Length: 113
Length: 116
Image 1: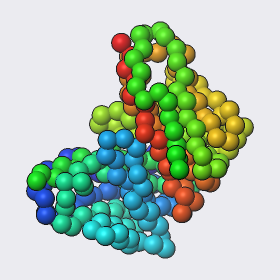
Image 2: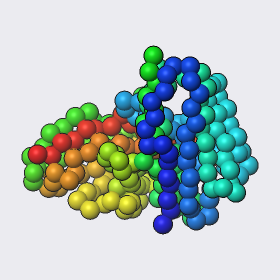
Image 3: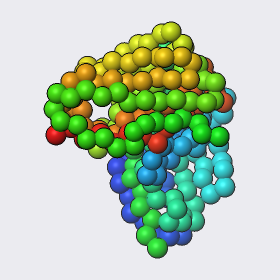
């Protein structure tokens, strides 16, 4: 059974701080790892990391995949109150079925002004 | 561009009542999914439809049924609601299977269901 563990489960920091969110996984036949941001409603896609694309960056957010350590980190620099959200990590196996995606429980990030 | 639209946004049911959650996507995606999200449990897959005309069970299908009405619409039915089904329900779609590298899941805004 595939497994995704995120840490910490919750984190409170001050505006301007840099945060690192962790995601570790156990998956049969890894295909991709995805990060989503969930504010009050729908999760929205941030990054997809694969064997051929282990590092992604968008503005103040960046993510790295460590296939040796079976983990990924999501970094947010110069945090803003708008970064407050639940950050979800999901891992996909290459089994071919549409149910090959496993989500972690999420990290609840709170940015205090 | 609406994306994935879910109705209703909120619903309160009494134990034993039935209801159908509606989902429609306008992105011409092949695959559609229903998840539930509970505190401390993350997102769990209830049912999915890899393509029009097919449906399959996910991780937590008991107590639910689904219908892929056409390529756009995928509904979730609770035949006899139970308090354990109190949750936030998300519909999602993707172009091909779960991910196609540049086609990750697109989620609707969710339905908050309370069963008393």
